Image (tube, rainbow, N blue to C red):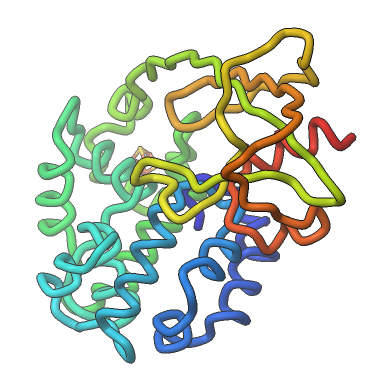
Length: 273
Ligand code: SF4
């Protein structure tokens, strides 16, 4: 949930609501995918919700304890598998998230290294007596002391042996993201308090609904907005549609329960306001 959404919103809103609706793996496994996607609505990257649902269906009651078994489940990569092993099952395994990676790269002065190398150093650094506390401490160190900019080396318990502290920021400089601009055109057809939506295509948004993509007719222009999505910078333009044959009609006042993306929500809000 934290991949694209601020901590406060996840902690206060999405996470408790999701857990209230799906308190166990079993309830998640038996829930229809539509309701899982609706609960995920607004968090983006819907493939994560679908994978979590699939994983729940495979496991039913409990997640496996073996790192390799966890890795074989949909949506579980090295970080998630290690976090489950370390924090959930207290196993002797390193964890590397963004914060820990930053500490490790600086502590060992690793310049332009692959992710795999960072994991190897994390393994070397691991405290085998208290691996869980070690991982939690490194996460806190990264988020509170070893900050991306202006790290507080004077307060850091690792300062005596840190090899990269003199030029700390050099070891964690981000590569420049290359953004791609796209123009998208959607039709808005509203009748009797309902809006026409259509099933989305493509793996990312499978099982979701969106506005119909159309060829624009300028005289029907209703409005536009900008939207950022991963490396894409989208310019979305909306046009009035008088009819849409293959529509799935959704009540405007129950849109919050529909599996729609934040882009679709934003588009509807643009023409309704
Ligand atoms: S001494 Fe500075 S650069 Fe090194 S780990 Fe601590 S905060 Fe990060």
